[in-house]
Amino acid sequence: MPHDHHDHDHFHHDGMSPSGHPYRADNDTPLTYWQTMEIAVREILIEKGITTPEEIARQIDEMDARSPANGAAVVARAWVDPAFKTRLLDDASAASAEMGFDIGGLRLIAVENTDEVHNMIVCTLCSCYPRNLLGLPPDWYKTRAYRSRAVKEPRKVLEEFGVTIPDQVKIRVHDSTADMRYIVLPARPAGTGSMGEAELARLVTRDSMIGTGLPKTP
Picture 1 (cartoon, rainbow, N blue to C red):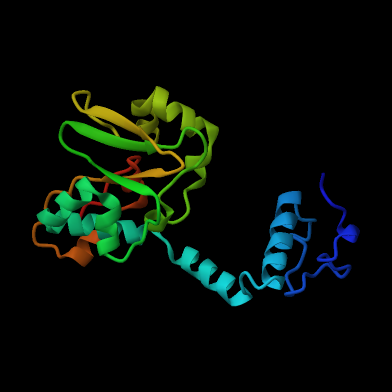
Picture 2: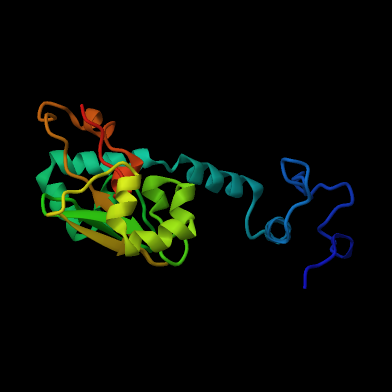
């Protein structure tokens, strides 16, 4: 049962937590039960010396630093370095770690788009997503419509994203799980032979690494 704010020592009547965190949302509406519980647990962990406000702030900064630019750097490296591409397709977690992107205990799998196969990523249960490489998942990735339709009618879903896949190209849908994530290695755009790694990375879009988009053309 949810606890009343006045029955818990960690809730302050002025609406502030011991570390000065307001117990109200930004729009001045009361926090949800789960938001309130998160703050309460955080304060208890700090009180007991299990963590510190500085450690929490550092972790938040690290999470905020995650963005699709990380994944784009990995893709660009695979485009210019055949040996790295082989390692990426063999063990994407280890290959990403080579570039300083720690995937943790998750298994990351890279799937390559070719002339015969176009890959597309979904999480049918919730919103499992390679956040270390792509940042936060887009809102549409978490919707019930995408999670169900991506499996049932992927070609039509792709068309709604503006991506038309020729009929002779097979569409392969990969379902992420709690301990397994996917990243698409899109095909390198034509006419980029003279471009360096940094230039190529700027062509890689977030959606192209999910499979719902394509890289930019130079």
